[in-house]
Length: 142
Image 1 (cartoon, one colour):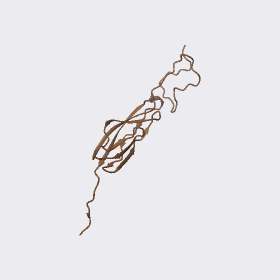
Image 2 (cartoon, one colour):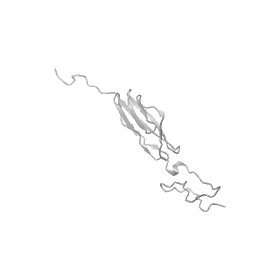
Image 3 (cartoon, rainbow, N blue to C red):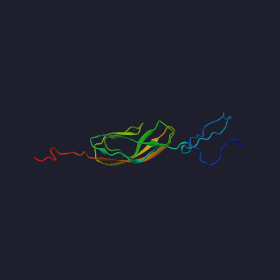
Image 4 (cartoon, rainbow, N blue to C red):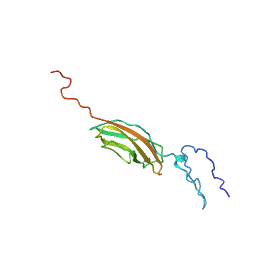
């Protein structure tokens, strides 16, 4: 006999509804379904963008912004491309920091994993420029 409280269908769930809630104790042997993360809050998604440029020899800090997911802890991993030499990522916070050592344009992909093993990814770019130097006495007439 079918459970009279079963839900069968493909209607979207209202925002914030967790389909794994149990309003009353389930009878022994009851089937409790688990829904994929895209139905229960989505996967974490890093917001792809060209982030702040860096300059060789200058301290650099930027944080990857995140939306969605099942909550912390989050893990940030470089899964394609590379960060500029001298810049690293904090795998717990998504903060990029360091001092760039080589000019160029660096494109990389970050995959974020949430507490329920949901994964999302985004592509980013950092442009690193050479430090601008002004020769001594430039602009002064002798």
